[in-house]
Length: 245
Length: 246
Image (tube, each protein chain N blue to C red):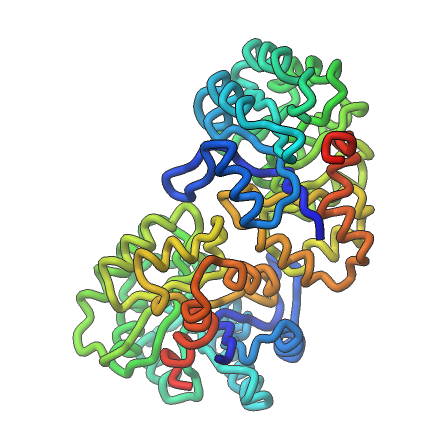
């Protein structure tokens, strides 16, 4: 089973002091046995989504076997967030990503809802940071109210911290559309406990690389008490299905 | 690779689980491949200082590699000093741990009495730091108590660069590596200060030790000697406990 990192980024990362090119991200992943990485450009997170998405699609085109392109969208910096979502859907992207905490916008936010509903209709999976208390709860409410969701459409929560873990698990139990990325879970053998509550098929391996340690994220899954079959699902099987690889 | 986790907790939490008995502690050590562990009482840290330290005492066993810290609390200086008097002469207790309150760092003015009392036991003091404010406060402590060996727990969280700078400046400061899992954290730290000042810790069960093992293994710039020192040997030297483990 291929190992897929659903959460990798390349480019400058001002607050974490580490800049990594997509080539570096790719080669570091390869050295640790990662078959492919779903990447986005940090330019898209911190500066310009349009420019970042162009960088991402170029990077993925240059290493199609190793890099899977993820688009970013900043609804607070777009006068037509629905149109921006349509552009992303028309591009090569397998995933759309939102960063409400670092971009400073709330979940209850009209441009976010407009763009999210486009992704839901077209079936492009979405990943969103859920590091603030209340975000996962609002997201459940928002997703529940979206019309015309495509079959099998999912939203992945990432950057779930100890402060938002209980809320995230409750949200996952409430909303079958939600999945959970692993890199910030951290607590001892947490994957096994969470898997018992929501099922291993809803967990996706991610690292937060290049800023965050890929070795740590991988070690957390590989050293968990999950069965070999469940580890395979988390490490790549679930992502392969979700991203239609 | 032998592992001494110098930052782990005794007493389970509803969210993260954990250990409540010596048997469970030994099972956790086996599960995570830990040869030795030094425990803080969760109850002493978050609630009842005296009861927590008392419960911790029951499970410590140097021969099995289970060590512990007396938790001191800057809001209870007299009780803390009494706790230190009760436990620090025992070889199973290898230091004093002090924690901030609700994002208020451990300040020199609040901790001075406790730190003065700690001097007579010549055992390290461990101070938890969430951020650069915590590191700044520890620098003041390290300057005034320059003969006391001080370990920064959690390395200042996201502000670990500040912790590295502090350890570079103050000879008596050491860093426990838990906290952020930034990819360049260990490489940068060992490039700035000696690997002899780093100690393996995880904050088990709040974090899984395998995360930090993965981070060490990933850092290709560490020599085998550096890995051995960080994972195990530095703790034996700092806490002067080689004899117990042998």
